[in-house]
Length: 202
Image (tube, rainbow, N blue to C red):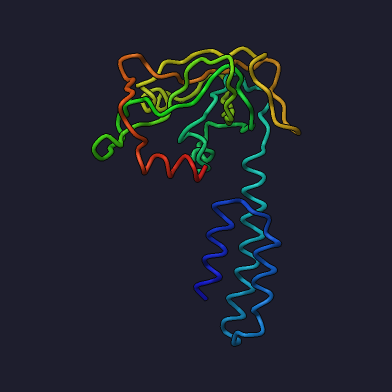
């Protein structure tokens, strides 16, 4: 049964279509006993249910009352962040005029040695970054300001933001990007391993 859980874990983390996982499960059904088959049917249902809910959550559009958008590009893009009750919309976007780099000292994360770097953005006319616009009604929670205290908020004009196909920003929205404070920058550090893992799984 271990192989089944590996498939499920991979499917959930990488968001692959469920049919591939279910085809694999179906191909080995004949090799299992009655008790294991019961687990199989439950697992197939679990995969379908999880896929549908993740798909809906990650592509939901903001309501008409949305006015503030935070352009997340680091650990904030992790799916667990989408569960914040204050978020009313999640939109995948490209932001032009910025580049990402690991030159930011952490405000609260712990690393080892010089592996303490977290993501930051800097202006660059030649670059484009992928991001997720987290939409809030009227204002984002103060908790987010505390968490991102090593950064300043920079407003980004709509002309620099391009939504992925099938998505669009509301006309009234104001979008902001967290950009690292000068005193928090260091160019002699490497990425924090745990932080990097969180970003990649997002």
